[in-house]
Length: 212
Length: 212
Image (cartoon, rainbow over all chains, first blue to last red; front, side, top):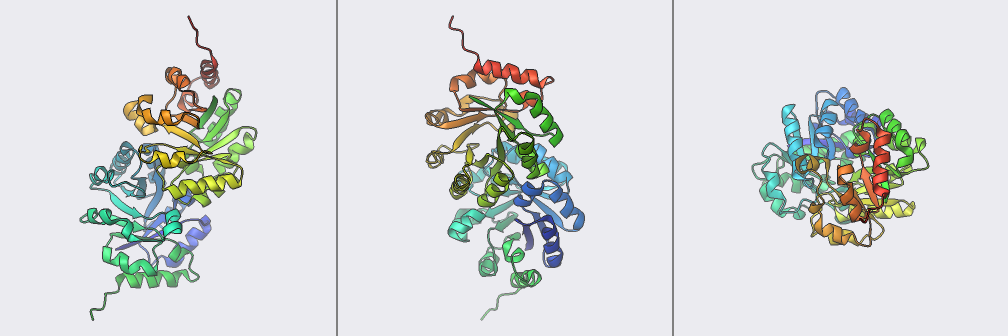
């Protein structure tokens, strides 16, 4: 299970500093949507330049203009970009085509995707799917995997990630689900001791369960 | 009918230059999603500073993190921000609340909104609704108002905009629909003579039909 560090709602200097602090505990670095919209494509360039040996995920949340947005983020150094599952199908498909051309990947964010829309997205076998409780939903409901019952079943045999306010408290549940990637933001970036928080999370992820 | 100039896929200098050229022909200036993602929030700041007397629309396409994204774009000078209708309802609602606090407005982009989702969005009487054929869909299908039959009926008595590859060819149809705002991008920004193109479009919008 890979750990993706989501960087959001901070300055670029803070993003670089926190990544340095937890570098050895995490696997993938996510340039959050808030950094992209606040600082532009240079947020991606700067993080790739600082950390060239980690996979970089650009949380573009692409809804349209797929070829242009792919070009923008992949040329800036992203290895993976996100497209919204709720976007028109042609947009998702174009992202996958653009990524393939460059030997890059697309994470399809399943935020607010209705079950009737899911089958057409699951056709994209090469995608990484992201089960996502959004920040705004977390503030309303809290993190609750019960919100994805069908989706979890459909994730079997696929490459998928889980995101949305995951902390030490929700980690046991996440471990049972066995995603390919667990996306963690505030539980690390807002911790007083970020390195300690990341270490504790990593240890909890890789600890074996005790069997009686 | 207001004309909103959509600025996309260009440098900031080009965005300012084209706006200067067509300043007197257009009403609202839209900082396109591609400018926001490429140049960050400074794209909004710079256009507001150059053109303080026009309403500025930030095409944020907000899907999550509504309070933060509203703060970001409104503090940068946006008068109107866009939220995606396909976002979780709490996200749309938070955008409207954040806008109201600041006496600003939200345009709800109805791109790919299913008819079952529409009624909950139409509750937001203060919103500007945007009927939107996305760029990627235009390239697939072309602009075709027949794609919004139910939506057009629901727009009666509301404040709404129409967007998606609108040019002189589709203007007759748009005029019949009588939107509050017509959003025009490439038909102006990619024209050889941008001022002439904008003048021709404006004249066509305001020309009376001949009743021969």
